[in-house]
Structure formats: C-alpha cells, structure tokens
Image (cartoon, rainbow over the protein chains, first blue to last red):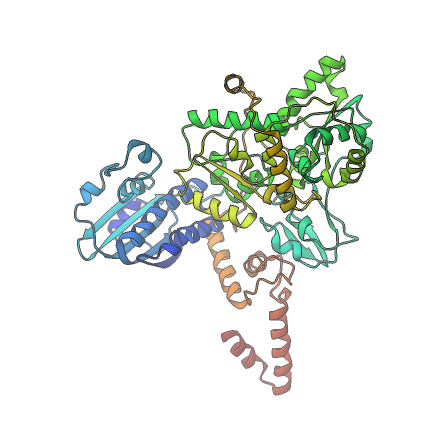
Length: 160
Length: 439
C-alpha cells in the first residue's frame, strides 16, 4: 500500500491514536507532549530509529507552537506501515513557507547551525527526519503540519 | 577470573519486603514478592540506590574477600580518590596511601594524576570531536548502565574514553610485572571503591571485554583498619606527587573543574540526571560540549560504600586541594600522543539494553497498551508500591501481561471485598460492583 496515497485519499483507520493540546507560550511544559509520545512509541515497540527521528521532529514542531502560536492540536497516529503526526495550530501563520523551508535560513553562525540551532522554524530539520512532510499555512490564521515516518516491512519490531 | 554478575545482593534472611528499594530503583528493576525483594538482573544498574534506602541491611554490595589477595604474589591497592576525603581534613593523601600498605597491600597507586590525564584527554578529544553534542562522561558506571537501559539514544553521546581506574590498572600491571620480574597474572590490582556500581563495572564491564582490575574492596570495610594505621603514623617519607585537579574528581564538578574546556555542565543525583537526559534526548543542550554526570548526589563522595558524610567529604577534599596548591603533573603533549595511540579509548562498543516493549508484534503491543491504560484507570494511582511493583502503571502492565492480578492492589482488593459484602447484604451485588467501577 502506498502511504502517500493514503494521505491524499481516505486514510485507513489508525491502529492507535492519541491527541494532545499545546498552548502558546507554555514554555514550562515545552517538550512534554514529545516526551509522552516517545514513551508511548517505546511501549509499542516502534523501531528505535523511527522513534529518534520522530522525536526530533515532534520536539521542533511542539516548540514552534509554543513560540509562535496561540494553541495547537497534535494528533499522533500509528498505522500498520507508518507513524503519522498532524500539528494544527491557531496563530500567526508563516507568510513565506518557501523561505522558511530553506535549510539554515537564519541569522545564526555556521557553528550554531552545526549544533541544530538557528535553523529558523526548524522546518528543514522536521523534513529531514521524516519520510513524508506537508505544510499549509494561512497568515493570521494558523499552520498545519503533516508528517510521517515509515515503519520497516516487519511493522515495528523492536530492537533494530 | 572473577565471576560475572551483579554487585548488589539482597539477603533473604534480612529483607522484610518493605518496598523502599522497589520504589527508588531508577530502572524499576525490583519487585517485592512474598515479602522478599527480587532484583531483575536485566534491568539492574548496580547504582546502589537500594543499598542507601534499605534500613534492614538486606541490600549489600558484593566485594572482594581478603582471601582473594592470597591468590597473587604481589598486590597493589588503587584507591578511588574519594578515599582521600574520608579521614578528616588534616590527613593527607600520602598518609592514606601509606596506610594501605599497612593493612595488607604490597604497594599502592595514586589515581589522581591519571584523573588529570583523562581530563586532558577529554579536552583533546572534544577539540577534534564532531558530535553528537553534548558528550557525557562515562566515569560513573551507574550512569553508563542507566544510558544503556533507559536512554539508549544517548549511547552516541557517551565519551568513548575509559575511566582512570581501568587505565591505571592497564598501565600498572605490565610495569609492575617488569619491575618485580613476575608474571603479569601474579600481580593483583585491587580498586578501593566508594560504590557498588564500580564493583559491578569490574565484574561485568561495559565497553571492555574484561576488567583490568582483579577486584575491589569497599571504602567502608577498609575504613577501620586504615584509620588505625593512619593513627599509628608514618608515610611522610613517601614521595608521591598528588594531582590537585585529580583529587577533585572525588566530588561533584571536580571532573570538569580540571578541564580547559569550560563549555561544560555537571549533573548529579538521579532526579537531576533524568531531567537533563530527558532533555538531551529531546535535542536540548546541544550547545554544551561536555556533561559530567554522576548517579550519587555529590559524585563519588556520596557513594553508598563511603563512611564520611558527603558534606564533610567535600570540605575535606577542598582543604586537601588547597594545601596541594596549583600544580600540573601532566604534559599536554604526552596526553595528545597517548590519545593518538588510542591508549584512552574504550575497547569495545557500548550496547543498548533497552527496556522491552509490551509485545514484539505491533498489533499485539497496541492491544496490550489499551488493556494497560484501562487497568490503570481502575488503579488508585497512589504509586504506593504496596502491591510489590514500583507504581500503578507498572502493575497495570504486569496485569495486562498476565503476571500480576488486579487484586494485588490492596485498594482495589478492599473495594472488591466491600462490594462483595454489600452485595451479600443487599442481594444487589452485581449492580453495586458496576456502580463502584463507574465511579
């Protein structure tokens, strides 16, 4: 089954789904949702590499909501062939997505960038760590991110 | 050859099944069944948290026996620099080293300068290292095992340099064998340890096929004889250059204080370590080069097998350091060349020992996860561990896996008994249970 087609058409029902609300400016709980999703993925035996990549993406996306949006909703879904995340926020939106997607679009020094900082919204970092990545944004309304990481053909066997 | 295995032991005669250890274990390795604490060897890090909280002296650490010394023609004591902090602020490291020879060792080895070398090697390594950042120290074996089990993603962050104690033994054995014209196997190199975690790292090393050390004695068991020997005096004739930055390794922040790189952090105590490691996993702290991490609250001076309290020990070490004055024993160029020759390198890979998922099959794991979550809703979430499992979530998982029952929870059991009695009295038992459940 082609997961890209699922996303465009009617996706099959998720085997497991959980949603989280993230409030803008809630720095105190920054990273909590990513950490909880990571714990769930460990329980479910999602391969370590998939967990690692998604955790990086989730953390970037979660912090974006906290820093730039009023409120966001995170949908975490496990499918037989992939793990998917949808982040939908109400907030200022991104006026120029193409510019935000440019790797290292930022005023940061090369040394800082090497360490994962100053990559703007971290969108390139999310894209780099995921197999599917979509973004829609309306300035003044909000942003929706959709991304996924494919599971290997054995469907989430632990210890890889 | 010493028998592999764990350093922490539970004495079934002394254990009353109080669950104190079960609750503090950082990897949830302990269950209390039939009033006895049972340690899961797969999960135990030998951190010694259980030894610290046990009021019945049931949790202890396995150490070497005096008879082990007799197997060797020449024995050498390599004390943790923590030993220098144990006898008050007026006793010098040289006096302590001298005392070790009075209590049965043929010779002694001061570890402080090897600590200084490793600090230098760490600086040199970090200067060339390409990440991932931050690097985490591997001096504390409980931290190494915590990473293997709970934070396998952080294995790539571990500083791949061996600890001073192993490096000292590696260096010492051939040197002594040559000096004394003995077979290297006739030399017994024994560590004097502040904790059970290091004992375990000798029994079952990580990143090393076999420890270079032949065993370890605890500071606590040698304390009495050493104190008596110190009081008898002597040792002022010994010419042992002690490294200032090396002795500071006994206390928290000591390791980083001797480094040239100041873009460092020190974290100690389980709670703080968890706080920092959770965040490193989430991609934070990437701007930090190096993190010194210790499981004990004040580094090695807080080890379970020490005698002097950690506050007094810290003061003693600071006093000793002040007296030593500022000197450097280690040549930077020498350290660099040893680093290039791979002298400091961990010899083998560090393997993940990650906690197993609920099931290996994804659908089955999801079914178990749902069952676990539903069971957790029924449990009181007091995390009292009265059932013998460390918290309600773990009990829920065990019920879902079929190795525990919901009535193992005393709160649920009382509820069930009350419901049963009420049901018997009114004859409306089924309705009542439903109502209780819906509460």
